[in-house]
Length: 116
Image 1 (cartoon, rainbow, N blue to C red):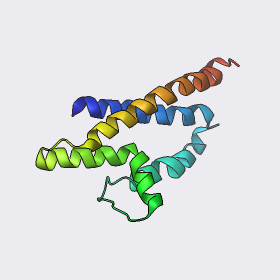
Image 2: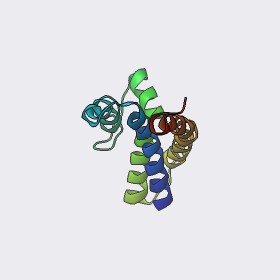
Image 3: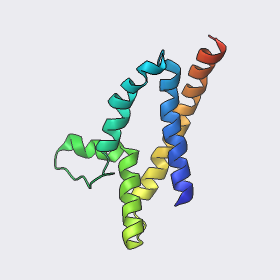
């Protein structure tokens, strides 16, 4: 469980770093938090289990890595059962890291070092 949580931390750090490179001042940092992070958290089964019959909500739950992490850990901790949610969370966190890390590095080099 701890390696999965570490991977989740790295993935969400990779999600936050582009905002660090793009946002002009610290005063604007609440904009990406309220537009990206809050909806991701509230629509992820973290605070209460979510189930929906609409196709759009089901698609959101499939691609939301936090949903898979919350559901997988809930099942693991309450019943001791490993589910596909944990494998899906691993896959989605790995994809987030592979996709976002090069973007983060490029944006931060441009912001910090002034490279083009």
